[in-house]
Amino acid sequence: MGIADRAYIRDNGGRSGGGGIGRGSMGHGRLSIVGWLIIINVAVFLIDLVLPVVNIKDYSQQITGASDQQLVEAQILSQEPQRQHALGQPWTRVTSVDPATRTIESEQYRTWHLLNGFGHFSLLHGFVKLEVWRVVTYQFLHANFMHLFFNMFGLFMFGGMVEQYLGRKQFLSYYLLCGISGGLLYLIFVALAAINVPLPGTLAATSITTPLIGASAGVFGVVIACAKISPDQRVMLLFPPIPMKLKWLAYGYVAFAAGNLILGGQNAGGDAAHIGGAIAGYFFIRRVHLLRGFLDFGLGPAPRGQSPGQNSRLQKKADKILDKVRDKGMQSLTEREKKVLQKSSRDAGGRP
Image 1 (spheres, rainbow, N blue to C red):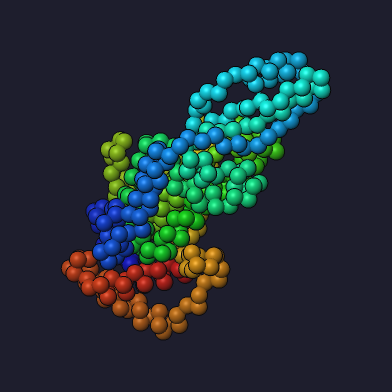
Image 2: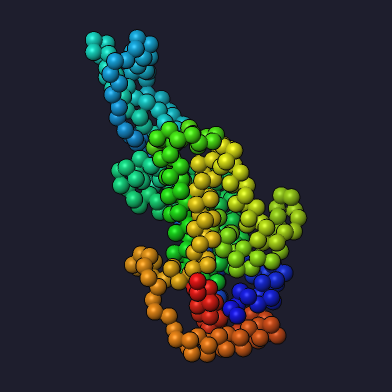
């Protein structure tokens, strides 16, 4: 029996798993990974606000055999003065109009804050142009303050519990993998739209240049992990303010995103990433041994485990420490006892 299986750890009146900015996992007194992630996301957002706004070209195209109407519209567009464009939205610059050959040459641009422009994820930049770093960088970019606030609030509320369960390095691996998986599922849906596969709602309107930004996929994975670690812990919703078991909150979030995806809501593309993060979270929180060494070597076979005798001795130590927690609380543990619990929890969670 691991630490997450104990009733008094699972149902503790909502005291475990909050925040995690000030302290590391299991209370080592250093800044937690959750804290670092929040600081980095906020810093990137604020820095990007003061950086120059840039126009970034997505692609060039040539139309041959253009109609009279297309030629007239292109000539008008080519003579328009340069103007301010909405951030992140596509616009076209006509570079050449030849009525004799009925040829129009143009370029599509998007206007961005600098970091968003070079860090967002899309089928064009992340896959076609092989700018693979974008599947990570998009996770640290946000469209506006409210987008940033709600993602960081979710990470603050639920990230500490998962970091304590996995440990610092495995938590970071887990979080990034959920974000990567969200980006990959989004890529699949956009690719289907690009080859004219019928998709619902706004998914059908996506193109190879449609951008994806935000930490939501990683946060969804974190919430799903909480549903595994402490399913019956009660949390209070903000709107409406009613208590709910953590597992129902997590699965409710996923159901809402899935419904929005199927029905084609306004953020169906983002919801595709949310579902991708949730699927990865469900998979990896049940196979945490796959996270070991991810940041060093990539996913590969898990390191050789301990012998059954070693596992048994470790579990006996953990059981005695958990009895102490039940009688005297987490604050009574020494640093060594906390490390034993953390190791026992990871080993128990790592078994398929």
